Length: 307
View 1 (spheres, helix red, strand yellow):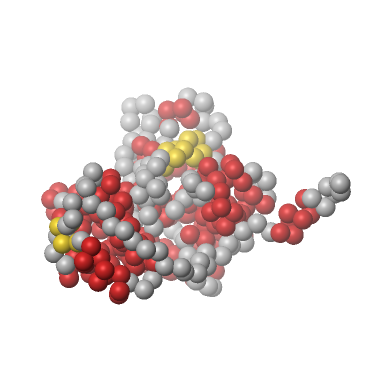
View 2: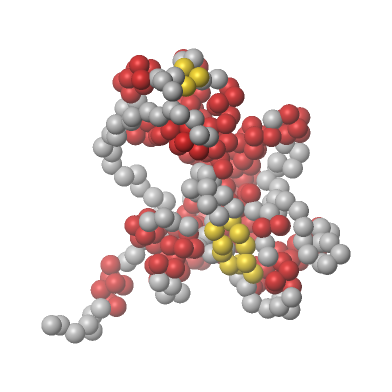
């Protein structure tokens, strides 16, 4: 196929595909922005249009939307592919880690049940992405096994369609599992077997978000609702409570970086295991997340025998 027809329908299909990959809210906004610009100015996408686009796309971030179009076409079995040259770019700085005491401060600063949400982000496995925490549902947790173990030990949760579109399994610490169960009982959402049932654990102001759109265009609703939930969480939880308690700005992804570093430096979890918990395809990414201290590494091998 030489031409890919561009319209609103394919826009929502591509953005739904991007959302299903578990991409961050920021990345989704970038894709949405550039995809809208492409569709607004062009009825079709082909080699000639690509040449014009590349002249105006000076940054790899802009060209990433073209890569997304390629991925969607492959996923949807559409015989269309763009040849996209890469631009050499410098790596962007990752969010800084937080002292563990500051993590405790922000958790204690927010109203219920969003203290539970922050605890989930920090404590489940190697830490959750904000999109994963927003989409976390009661049905994702293996309640039956936990309840039948007399509520001892940790729980198990499946993080569905995380980044890369893959599922991963993580553990939920015992105290957090107990508190989530207590919250479910308080809401009255347990069935006849005392198992919590239902979808999203944390509302983030989307329970009644655009009901007409939910009925008429479920795929568009998913994309817009996730963006709305992130914005609501950012301004009504992070800014209003967490940043006020800390006295400085906070990026929610800092919790995930802090968790990975904590697991490595304090709990002494092997990097390969942290990689699995985080859901990284490459351990190189895990190395960046853990922000390994070279001094700690040198101290570990200071007594190694010299040959």
